[in-house]
Image (cartoon, rainbow, N blue to C red; front, side, top):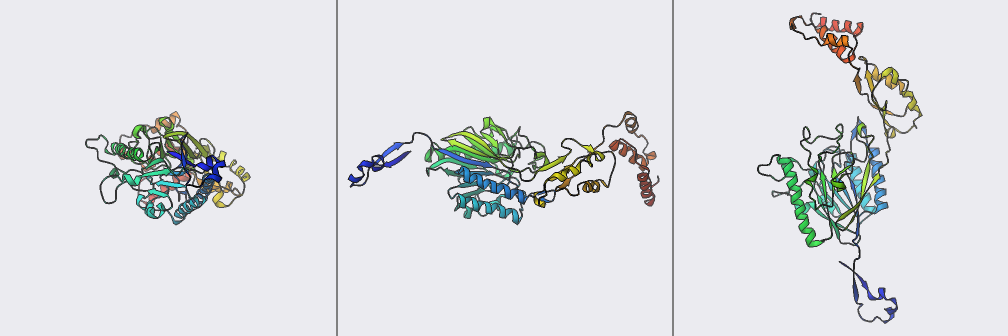
Length: 451
């Protein structure tokens, strides 16, 4: 590859003498071109958090991301699945997505956007406007198969990325989430799905190698994926299991060595494998209380020729805090209630900006007024109480445990009240009060059950 410079630009003093068409000199490129790419995933637009919309938080993230695009001027951005939280996203969630695409393209007309479907997305719906979007250099791959023939649609999934030179500097294998019906059939495979995923990436990378060698031998090979890599830290309360257990996890070496980088989605915590060439960017906002301590980020990648040089995290600012009282463990309600009014020191903000609050209560007995008491203590606090998880009281004392653990040998002598007493002691390490027993006996009598 050569950069051609006209003779007068190299020797300006000759400019007045030039009469004939200007000859050119071919100057070889001394260093490979630098290519900048942003990697993000797991936006989950449209998520409802305990009934509360996250649209404000997602809009703030997209505004911040637009600023990063303008600041870093990447040649491409990769969005590796779970664009939406459900296969039927709301109109508001879709408007956020398409408005961002329009704003990004208007701010940076040469930007390429490459988007794949995750397990939360409806692949066919996501790529429905692909024909229109491609005219704006926005590539959406929702389904991996050819529409009217068997096999992977390798040509559609292989997307060239152009550098500032206008030449191809990378090829991206845009692999969406692979369902069991999507992968090649491997006769005699111990696990048809996992072995099929491995075969799919091998087939796609082999095709990419052929195209790279024919078109741009110095280009980097990059893959996208949406899957669970074995050994990755998952967030069980916000990540939808692909199958029961961990049998859906793929080995990190499933991504061929020829790949300079693999941009993953699905696991919400940022983490890396294979010496950093396989990475999850993580979700941009916490999608559960478990994710509150995570460092949410977008990755800025720098490539030179076929090599990944750097993977720099760009921390995403958090607009709405997730608070837990107490910060660790559980506490009895009588201990917690005096602490809750301290939250009145938080700034008063509109509802959509108020922190989400979780109050973790150690149960010493049933309390139907628990939520009401907490809400009363929170009066005047600019927070949204979204969850009151409970944990039962500590271990039974030896005397109670001995009486509870005695096996019942004669079912004809077992009374309903005995079952109540046994279970209550097991849960709360104490005896039910007289009002509860009286109400329970009244219910039994009304149903004609002997007490």
